[in-house]
Length: 426
Ligand SMILES: [Zn+2]
Image 1 (cartoon, rainbow, N blue to C red):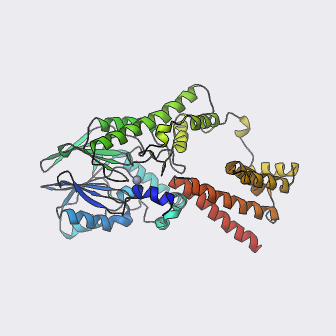
Image 2 (cartoon, helix red, strand yellow):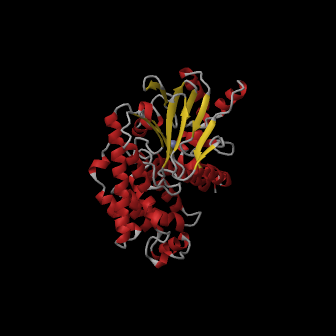
Image 3 (cartoon, rainbow, N blue to C red):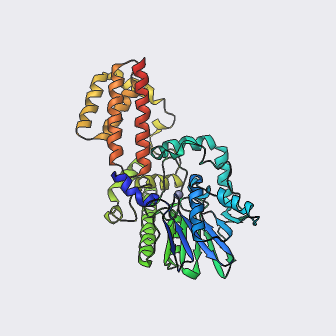
């Protein structure tokens, strides 16, 4: 098992579909991608999230091993495909048995999110194929929300929503964080938090390179609201069930602290009139050791470097260099061609290779890009530049812990390999 697989074991759920009753047998944890939480009452079941469409049948099986009671409520923590598409077997069951359809609770922004995904369906798939290339399950339209459950109860704004089932009260809260449509649930009778992706037991997924804006400050505040509950169990969106009060306190408070940190330090630099590059590199230098090595902040999916981008763009426009050259730039190919007119391609390649040998991989990539962009299609230098770039991307991918960073590097290396094959043909 590679380092990344080992690290991701917890993220994807150990031995997938781990099932675990907890809270005196009233609740059930189903480890999937993402996790599913179940609460049993005399009047029926409450399901918190539904995992991937692909996992629907296994999740259904797991739920039915726990209880044969009717599903009365389905709560969608947010509108990401790994949390709300595994519904089909539950709906079929309700139809088969002539049961009333379950109530589906979501935030109003989830409805808007689904509408946006429908508009951008092909684009979404295109990003999934790059972001999730290594897991290979994202090759079909099974992640599309073209058909998804429509909510029957919609939570508006920041209102707290409560409902009663059996003898139990369920509290739902909206807080922005990974998304603008997040809902988390608290089950006071047994002090259980159901967090969705607000807690994934790793560095928060904020600033994901293919994804839209996230909300660091609101997220930190959500963690603090959860802390006030002094919960005894926590069902995270991904990762293992928390069953120790102390672990819950630690995970929520260190995540809040890390989010406040990245937010406040970027804001400070914005107010100091610093541009993105300066901010980014300063932020790398000041990242505290206690976050770097913390067991609940491992950069397995999201990571600190991505988060810096996210906070910056929340408050600042796309002109982030402070250099007017970048306001209306020419094509990068044109610039590269001009650079190669000044010195020959062999010089460029030799310097890139030297940097590679000195293990200055990132710098080597920047030089290779000039060669790749500026060389003629039929030049022999292009082939060697491609080869070295592929080699470097693979080395960098091995070093990266973030699943997303790895996938981007590997997908690009594979795309370059295809180009190389094309070149060899001609
Ligand atoms: Zn998720």
